[in-house]
Length: 356
Image 1 (cartoon, one colour):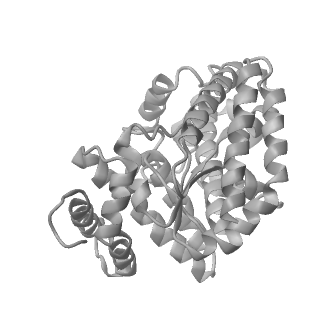
Image 2 (cartoon, helix red, strand yellow; image 1 turned 180 degrees about the horizontal axis):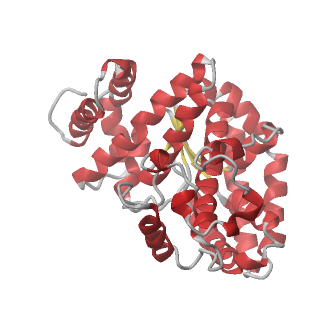
Image 3 (cartoon, helix red, strand yellow; image 1 turned 90 degrees about the vertical axis):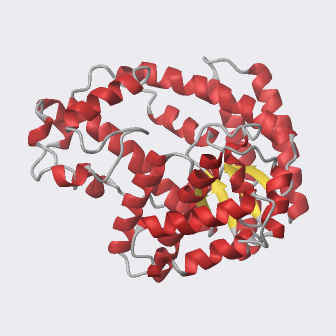
């Protein structure tokens, strides 16, 4: 099975090179359809890997990003986690967004920017695949999960929790005063962007969001429409990540505080409204991923993939992370968790010591 998986990576690399040679912004969707057909043919292989390979091993997938530059070693802590690591190829997820939005003329700037991001992502994937990193794979997991989970989960009821009752969501343009239509007690729980200040007034946060994302924000949206646009995007993404994690029994790795916070808010809601004990497992694992990356990034070290894997093996890093996971319910505060993770990461990156 591993041989077939490695072969699929070589085949995908050759396909990306051919697509990139013919690609321009006007025909993005046409050429990406070739990529979609390729992964449709590989769907059975992905399901087999999920059932017999990833399911029996600790596997992490780096997701919710458009690129993964492994030459920038601040993300290399991923390679100390689990037996396999996967980069969640975003290209087909982008294609779905483009196809759904072909008739939305008001968002022309957004889709132009998205097409540019697709081209950049293809260039990055080619570089990534050419490195042939052992036990590391580029796979469109969220897209594959969507073919497994035929029934889409409606997240609108969750989105509506952030608004007062009686709102006409088909006519949000009528609500100019956002303060009068949102449930303020929930606003501090979510982030709109990294460095967002959840203690600020909603109007100020949205104003800053417009500045941060001036190249994609539809200019004709009022604050109420923009707020729904933001949270719908984040929580749709969170749902996709959760279903992917659940379907393949693998764990998401984040390097964005915004994605991490909003995913955990969403997952807490899922766990609260479900009786499945397995979901608690995913919630606990999600609490670990960002602190691990954050503490590693804070050290400012530059370790290659081979170096960090060797140290993780010699210092039993995975065993210590498993111990922290098993003790999560005993931590009274987030600070206690961070201290444990910090100590483990410190021992990982330093030569002295017998292990975590």
